[in-house]
Image (cartoon, rainbow, N blue to C red):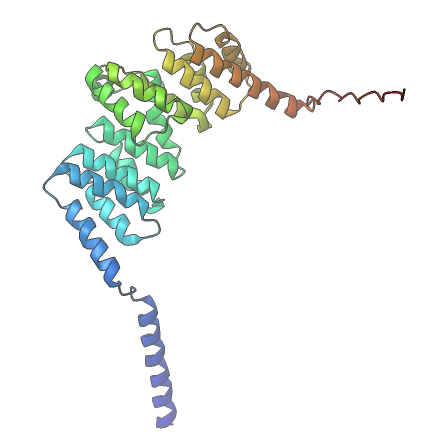
Length: 296
């Protein structure tokens, strides 16, 4: 009997040992240790630019808990540029476990951090990130309530908006086909790039309010880049709603070439979708067969 108990105990101890070994983190290779030493030196550098670059590059490391932890730590940096880079990295690495922390960053005191967090939330499938871009584009919240004093200050500060435009044009917010045009406009200290980027980000927002916001933005009289971006987003949205089609139709006569081209593409794409849904797809014209020549 004692032998049986002793055997069972040995099996149990052996099983526990096996589980412990299986659950223990893999030992780092010398190369990994060296690479982390380099990254950590950048993340803890006294030079903020070095910390920004190191934090942003964490986004290249996917499915790595250590990288996620490093990015979450960088979210607490005293420099907003570093916090924004860390927020961006969390989205790029697909860190869904960081959703709550990113939502918390939407209350950050710096707008660049808020935009980076919103962008990453969208990448991670959290539609709440769209609310920030809606507010940037329209100047109000989706709920109909007015923006906070801090948000209003951000949207009315030309220098701050121009700085955000720089990030929007060549940083974390994609410009699509308008990238080069948006980048060139940054040299004029213009606020259009960040508004255009906000419009493009709303392309996939399922909320109908964002669709209407894009239709309204396509009629922006002062900023042609915003109008062009709105039509770009309307096309990518793929919703042949009456207001979308009317907006595209109105844009065909826009005096700015970039705008009317985007409007034309949007109009064609939306009408194609509308015809497919109604079952009236266009057919290719019949090709005429060459007439055989009679031998002489």
